[in-house]
Length: 234
Ligand code: GLP
Image 1 (cartoon, rainbow, N blue to C red):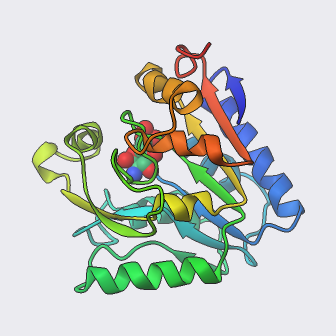
Image 2 (tube, rainbow, N blue to C red):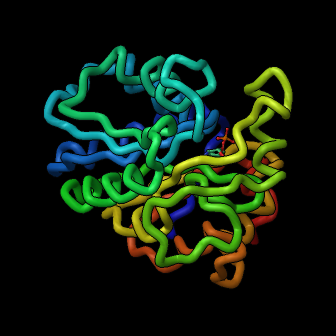
């Protein structure tokens, strides 16, 4: 695992952006994308760039169950605002949290990922070490699945909603095996509230209780962290 310590999110976004540019230059065709506050600066730098995505496919990690794409808190809305309204892609995929048959949606998402192997995967991390919405206890062999969100995740994400009661209780998330199938993984984390999760990701025992520890088993992972998030590293 390569660890890059940056001054702030602007610098972190630039590092991630440069890695993306390299990946695209060496032929990356499919990007795995994440939401949350950590990749915001990365998306801003993409918007400001002249990079062309018309031959690139994107696959998002996750979506809440029950939010329509025009709800501000939905990940469909987030991705449109941050990226897709500014940069046209060949195709963009995000799980459909409104599907009547969630199981069918999950299976279709898995088939789609198999058809589009991910070259470059962006990740954030939850305070409990979740990646995507794979909460502690999720099997490392998991593919896309419906998730019951942890109380700590609902609490952490309540800041984007009017109050905690508005946060959906479920989500659809790419699984850990789907994430691990990406050729390259770039994880960004900023702030002291991520320091524990980052310390475990780097030094902890690899365990399903801390999903991000699985990244120790991947051959091409870059962690981009600020000094606060790196605060508990040796
Ligand atoms: C959510 C998302 C994750 C994200 C995490 C951290 O739970 N499902 O993909 O990594 O939050 O978000 P933030 O970057 O805002 O701290």
